[in-house]
Image (cartoon, rainbow, N blue to C red):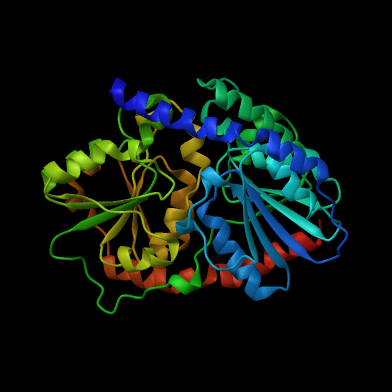
Length: 405
């Protein structure tokens, strides 16, 4: 366990070392860079790491309006698997000075900076240094929802200072979850204009099963972040899915995992070993967003198996959080097995009539729980409802929000 942790730390140190090599060149680049004089209508998406929802939003903006779309993130936080062809420019930076030089060329009154996080390096840089464009912050998760004002990590405490600054100084906030309720409790009043804009489904990826029934051999699927058990359990415990792998193996239920494309090899090393030793657990390679439906449609249920008991985060995190994987499952026509503690996610799932609340104990006899639902009725409802709660239908709400800033 110690050696695995040391390997991860070594990799992070090497990445940080490479970054330091660029500080002086990027600082000089910032000094000689020129500001923007054009009046082109553009949206500049800026984040430290690429998030899966951003390219999906950009695609439907591209189809609905005439903005130029630019994407900027740290070069260590970028992967093509979470991008698409919607952006007119895709730019990466290596240092904060390099980021500021990029932002300077787009900072004009006709620009909307659509920042996102956490992490907050990029978002805070936009808010502090872009003076002419409109600035919004787009969040799915907030750091303060994890442990309140007393997180167990120094890096998180430092990033929470940035989080508070961003929330209190942007022109607008796009909320995909209800975690802003917790932020207001700890940070105080947040005056920015707000838009509640869930991730929504992407119409391009809809799959409608021609034959609606559970497979002869039951199969469930999870997509997203997973963590090996040498990581900090107080924080990452919810993403340690060893317990569910063991339970599904005992019940001879196939359990498939597609890891997030942003995970390092060290994050998933446990699951590589489990895949070798278990008959009913299957670890797959991560896949791009535009290929997910083709993979997910093979299975019977999506699963989002998070519970209060698996970590020491605030209960608010499970109550108020959301996840893109929920909408990916609905795009593939899959009902979802939710851990019963996920209040907001189960509520959103009920909008599709595709939500099944499962207790910790009920995962010990999952076939019995599944036998109580009308599977065909759920799938039919999901395929009907996902159009209403789709980006194609809802994207104009975001455009209107931009226009009213």
